[in-house]
Amino acid sequence: MTNVERLSKILAQSQRAVFFGGAGMSTESGIPDFRSSNGIYNQRLHTNFRPEEIVSHSFFMNCPADFFDFYRTRIVYLDAKPNAGHLALAELERRGNLAAIVTQNIDGLHQAAGSKVVWELHGSVRRSFCINCGENYDLNFIVENKPIPYCTKCGGLVRPDVVLYEENLDDRILKGAIQAISKADTLIVGGTSLVVYPAAGLIDYFNGEYLVIINKTATAADREAELIIRENIGETLSKAVFLGNRE
Image (cartoon, rainbow, N blue to C red; front, side):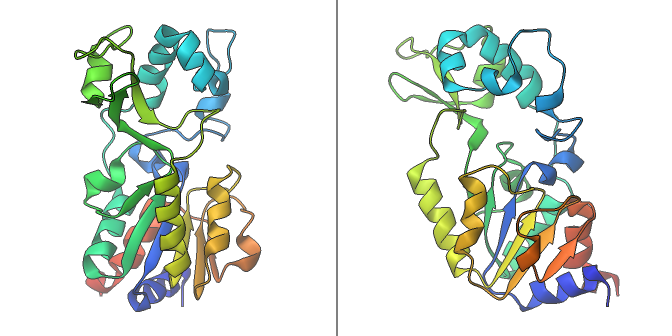
């Protein structure tokens, strides 16, 4: 039995599976990851600041114009579409095998693919809000209002609804993710090397039967995994979910 066949069997037997994903989930949609050799954090910038500094709370408050310039050009990918993996997970949810998705990504592609229960640990580029009055805005508002988007209601600074460096995760989202993982019978970890905390620590709440790792490089959870697959995550998930359809 191949790894894909084993994964397909595990997923078919699951009733409360949870997918925990990172940046590698979206690379097949044309969105670069952060920490690989070609990732955003290793790109050469025409500035004295490192990318990690630019996407920090203090930089956003002190240099909003530079923050938004970087945000629009390096973080937002308007043309990105859900890949085969996103679509496969949405199908798993529709079938009743997948209970939730917990993602470190901020691209909103899981919802675009049709997934309903998605816990976005680091927020989403699709949402924005005024830091003064709380008025909500969509992504287009930030893209179109250059160099700095200001609230049309009160004139306050509008910011993306994403978690920046120096900021804490949303407590409600964190609790929802923990609850989903703790109740899962299968946990699929995909596209993340599990080095970013506190998000990476969430898999410690898993007490189910099958831990599956789909990642091209080693992770801190490999030792506990029932199944490890070192292939493209989108292609792997699609093959496993739709395996029966090809027979």
